Image 1: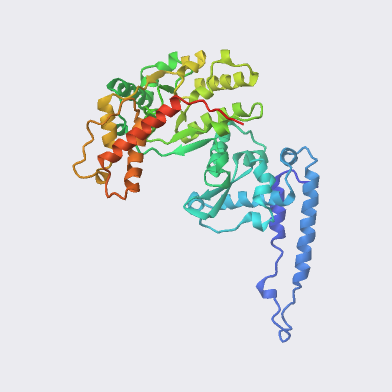
Image 2: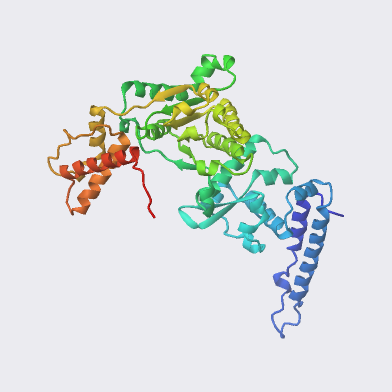
Length: 447
């Protein structure tokens, strides 16, 4: 009789492992003739034959129309890989959450036990098992069985909520592993607050309004009844637009910090794919991950993905923008887009953004405040004055470079502290670099 369920294989393997001599049946030498002698080789042979029968029935189950057969048709695992999967499932069911998180309750490496290499296994390829490395304990590895695998074994439906949990597991596995470079995002724990942001009162008022809307969402949609008149597009979607270095990324960090959330910064190098349809899947994934992690979703240089469809020629490029628009309508969290070229945005995309926040170059007073914030007190020469410096046309990002370069010039001179001459030299250097970027000279090659 062939297997119809994975539980039957678990039962037979468990029964096979009971083939072992009891302590009372062991031989202790020639002078203990009353003790029954047990041939250990016979037991091992019996186990091998029993395991052979299990393998035969396992291979036959692949051709059946049972729940196990459907699983193996969808995920054609080798027998030793399937045994590894069963061991992992059984191990997780035996342990409490406290034991799993603390790494307690045994250190068995089931991949080594079953002679399976995780990197090249079908378990990794089909995303049935994820390997998670603890950054605080690099030698400690935890294997998590995906919900997709558990539900498929039980012939149950793989619904969206379980898929989202698996996506979170997949990304967590990439965070601290050799696969980290393949992750779709950077996760940032913001350490800056609105006190670190130097902007106009108007801009700060817009940020506070966005913050209040997200913090008091229940009041707005439930108590005030907005959920009855607005069916989609309930998320807080912000467009930060303005010149580079004016505080757009810093403001996104401040928002996340004020909400007590992490910032999920999308990586375009991984979002964009050369395969048709893959970029759309990646866009869907980052929105699902932001929901699962309850994080602030941040698209920097957003014009790269939200280009006007009128300017696009390829059908797959239009499909990417369409996917982004659909995900924005369904997303109910907070999403921030930042751009230096808002004029390139698609019109339909702009309509789906609930608030546009304009970042401008700092005035002289703001420049002085930023400069003062960026120079630690203990780094300054005694009685150093920062007033009267020529900071014209410098953004907040430029002033940050001024501070860092001034520190470098002071270190070059073996100075104990940063002096005014170092800051003045740094200002000249930063302004010169900005001029070179804006006015590139034509290079003529001879020969």
